[in-house]
Length: 124
Image (cartoon, rainbow, N blue to C red; front, top):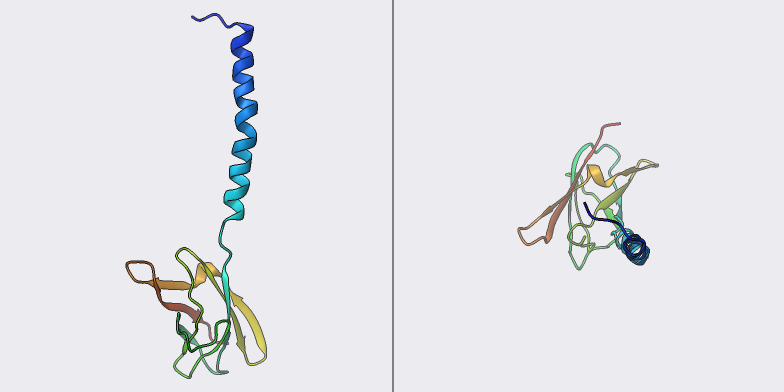
């Protein structure tokens, strides 16, 4: 068994004190770099219930406010990046509520480009 000398303990402590601030800084930066959810407001026809389908990345459409047609289809210029979540703010008949990212599907191509955003609108 190795004899511990005072210098050995001090060097371990010095190493810890040197690395601790660096590790804390990396942790703070990684949390701050997390992408927030992209928010899209969706105007839904009064009687609509079912799956909504939004075509993203359409340059001629509005980015943050879209209107579904009677079939539940709309387009948006919003183009959620790889790994970016989407929150939908649903406006229907004077009521507003959110569909959280866990309940919104962003369908993507093999290389990560978004091709459709889907969520379910419940019946009233």
